[in-house]
Length: 79
Image 1 (cartoon, rainbow, N blue to C red):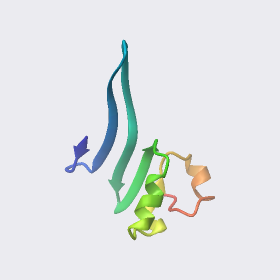
Image 2 (image 1 turned 30 degrees about the vertical axis):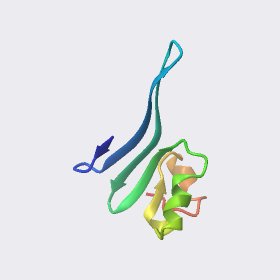
Image 3 (image 1 turned 180 degrees about the vertical axis):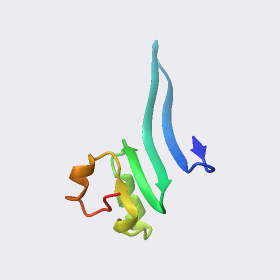
Image 4 (image 1 turned 120 degrees about the vertical axis):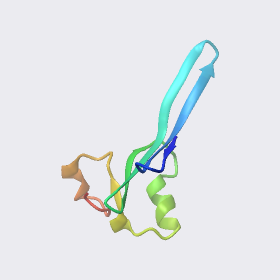
């Protein structure tokens, strides 16, 4: 799901596995105040690592899935 107007982006897992419904957010990223906020990262490699690999500075990435008081202990922006 991409909402370029409000800068919300999600990758979802939707479907069926046998008789069971599957629905879940794999990736949720927002752009706020010119920073990339990673709200959910269910990938193995890590979206932050991929962003850094293509040249996005760590100070432009916020790990929104961490509590605000924990963010200061990361190498990324705090908010």
